[in-house]
Image (cartoon, rainbow over the protein chains, first blue to last red):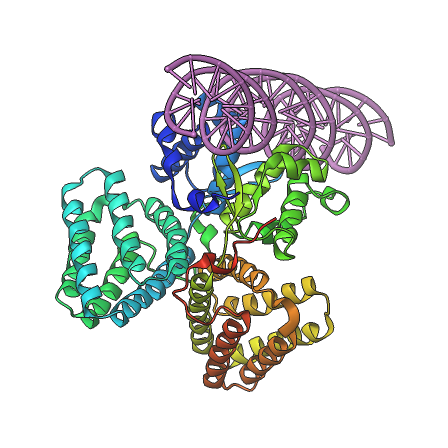
Length: 242
Length: 242
DNA sequence: GTGCACTTGCTTGCATACAAGTTGACGTCT
DNA sequence: AGACGTCAACTTGTATGCAAGCAAGTGCAC
């Protein structure tokens, strides 16, 4: 345990992961993609054995994937019963967007407090993200780029804890996007709004960036289709199940 | 993130949990307690086999516990190497307290927006928590009551997503408290400040509750001993290990 | 003495076997 | 017919065995 600092700093063992990802990672990616692509829908019941058979692996790595997905809010494991796909409703969408607004506005304020130069540099980095966004066309790619944009924005505040919280939040955001059936249909609007925010930061107008960001999140909520009747119980449209 | 609540609350299916909790839960509780009580300290290296042998169970449930603890930020598992206890430093303490301030102030504002009656009721419930706090004397009990107080405060905002985020945050807070070696020495001050906040809410002075809360969090940071020199590298005081 | 391949002892990753719990259906008794 | 007990087909929970990976130490060749 003398070289623990090395362990903490250097991630040089990851070369093996590129050659042959662990079975647990494959299971995680498979289930997550199936969830995000609508193969599994709200209320579906999954079992470790079924997924393991589908992937040709044993239950052990699938079990690990289930736990990770439960921690990220995608699944809910019931003892001795199975795992159900957690349904999302307007309540959740409102909650996530409210939380995102809170964290992202905080990030902008913290960024502005770090000085004009930091604001400009962050805006520049975000603009580069937007350029990539305009090129990427696949749904999965658009998802990933949206994640990098917003996570970079929050990360620019310099608070690692808040950044970690936001990553958790983003998982739920992706679940909402998937459930909204809108998917990447509004990707163009997203990119345009991202670019506007990045430009405002790059030109050192943080106050306008705040306003643009708030508008952006409101627009995202509206486009998701969950904006109406926030008090509606989430179970309204998810009663049917296998 | 809320699987702990699930385990504690969702006992309606199986009566076995009262007699014999799952081995994975025992392993989780054992490691977590050891972490919080200082048996394991920052940088320590744990292996599944060792813990399994200590508890007289197999590696499988220990493995599950490791994953949960990693998700909560206590451990970091390195492939084929083992799990190290994540060290915490002033940077983390500042980040956590800043995030807590952000979320808890948001909660107070959201609570105030829900109306005077909601504010009074929440203050009343919090006062009841404080009464329990004054009775409980064991360190573990004090920890748990502090958790219920702050989680109830944040939960009163009515945003389940933010509440979930805050629970995640609280795990890190507990780790910081443990690392600060201050532990429950300042429990009396905590309780007094909690009571002041609850009273302000009960008497419908939310603005003062805001101020008291900010003071409380600043005091917590100060008492933790991590308040000075936030840029200091985290390894400063954590070199010694068993 | 120096450098390098090998060996050894640790670790995790995965597959498999078995134990235990839950559910729903089926048959039987009243 | 209706209620009730039994059971069979699922599920997860845990233990165990084996393969593979990583790091340090050992000994040999130079």
